[in-house]
Amino acid sequence: MKLQVSELPLGKPQQTRRKTPKIAPLIALTVLLTIPLYYPSFRDSSKKFTEESKAYESLGDSVEESIQTRSHLEYSTPPEKEEEIDHDHPCSGEAEGCHENTEGGVDDTAVHRHVSASVGRRNVKGRRTKARRAKRDVVHRRDSSHVQRHEKAAAADDRIETMRSKVMDEEECDLFTGEWEPTPEGPYYTNETCDAIQEHQNCLKFGRPDTGFLQWRWKPDDCELPVFDPVQFLELVRGKSIAFVGDSVARNHMQSLVCLLSRASSAVDLSHPLDQNKRYEFNEHDFNISMFWSPYLVHTEKTDPNDEKRPFNLHLDQFNLNWTTKIASFDYVIISAGHWFFRPTYFYLNRQLVGCLYCPETQVAHLKSTFSYRRAFRTALRAINEAVDFGGVAFLRTFAPSHFEGGPWDKGGDCARTAPFRRNETSLEDYSLEMYMIQLEELRIARKAGRRNGGNKFRLFDATKPMLLRPDGHPSKYGHSQGLNQSFANDCVHWCLPGPIDSWNDFLQHLLKREVS
Image (tube, rainbow, N blue to C red; front, top):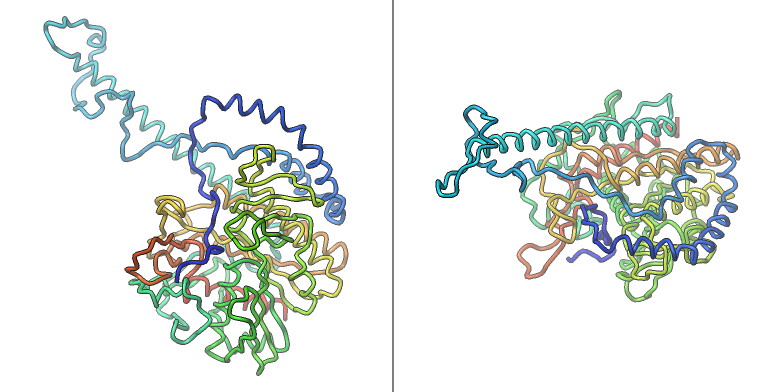
């Protein structure tokens, strides 16, 4: 089955180095001259958005102040990446003769010696000296680049841990910092025992040759995380309900939960096969699970009702009534969003167009995906805080990074690894880091607003740190039949079922135990 359009990350999530065209100064001047044409409406709409979020404004939070400051910088284009050095090919065009033998002494006078053209001799020693210097320069730049990357990663880790400490419960163990360790157990279900698996997640059915990716479990640094127990879980949620709000990765999580529970109890699927919203009931335990399809979390409109490839209009300050009017009946809500925010979109505040992402219009402000991502989460979490009858617990499940290597998703990028990373082998960077930080910052603001109003509980469900280490858990090319004479993009966004995403329900079970206790 070919991947649905909605389940591939359209847009430009991969940051690549770009050459600045010579016409760039003229473009910059044009932008400066046209900003006054659209800035007043953006300013007024932003003011309106701010007024509607007064509960969040008056928190006196330094994070909030930094957010307001950064919001004015969201017009700027993403910074270009530092010049990368090809470690496999250290010779550059300036390092003439770097392929030659460099053994022997250095004769500085040879550099200045003039040799008659009739002799036909080259200044070999001079060329060798130049080659050695060029190689030393390359090594120095390579070492400097490595140090800079290490320092950048360390700074990012410090930034992450500082913010995480403000949204974690200090008295509880940090479940989400640890490593993946091998286990002989698993998988706990198969594509033959669970019918909730969609084709594009059905890696075993479509011939994935390795199964080692199924035999890892998450081990937190400072505590134990028991493996999901379906009988115990069903007792925890007897008489209760869980709602998933988000995109196809949220649905991926819900399907994993349904499959894990199928070992102990059968669910009744009450949803239409073509409906993006889902509902499962476990009648023996008076328990139900629902999925609310809302990839942008806020109110959206299609620019073309019949074509999901076309851009969407995002009303970033308006609630999505599809789910915000229904959550009062749920005990637990798991909210998430991510990859859809890289698709071409138009941004609205107070019903006025204030910008876009990847749109062709030159008269519209071209903003970054972080502009919409932050405001969407701000509005969605405010909707939960303002839900009068919602007395449950809301978990913000953080962004699960994709793992395209060798190119972006539409240029042959793939995720062919067969084992997890160790945590010292990779780090969050670029857009993944920014999206993760936005979620942590917005969660902190929502928690403060909720506590001040004596209202709702918000909890962190940190999928980012564990899943960053699982490049081996995606379908890749095993989400469809092999050997077809068709072109498919490799899927490095969703997760195989069964697969590493099953560990999210280990986390969920432990988090619910905390709430019950």
